[in-house]
Length: 127
Image 1 (tube, rainbow, N blue to C red):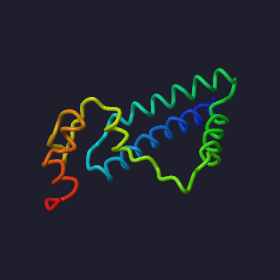
Image 2 (tube, rainbow, N blue to C red):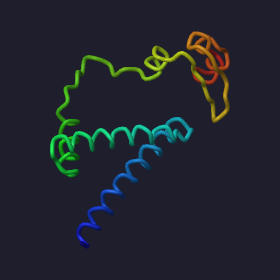
Image 3 (cartoon, rainbow, N blue to C red):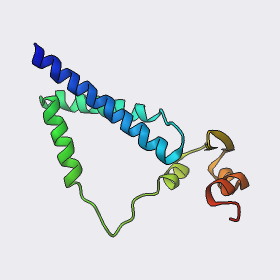
């Protein structure tokens, strides 16, 4: 019983640490706390449980498999990584741009792309 509680505590603590690290990285890069990142954690956990139950695997075996898949996935050094901003602009109907937590532009991607406030905030005043 004590061993099971220790494993449960380690699992839950690892999940909390993963969420905290994701928030910290997002905040350190963007200076905005992106709490939508939590929905991605929940989605990943849900898919992990569905696949674990369907395959009859345990949690730790599933975690080991996920880590191995990340290491062996094909990487193409000649191809650039996709630009997340370009992807967002292609799939969005409406975009809101923040600068230090203040809304500076909102509208369709074409309108936001040409907005002088966005250009000044992200490319500098001289751009």
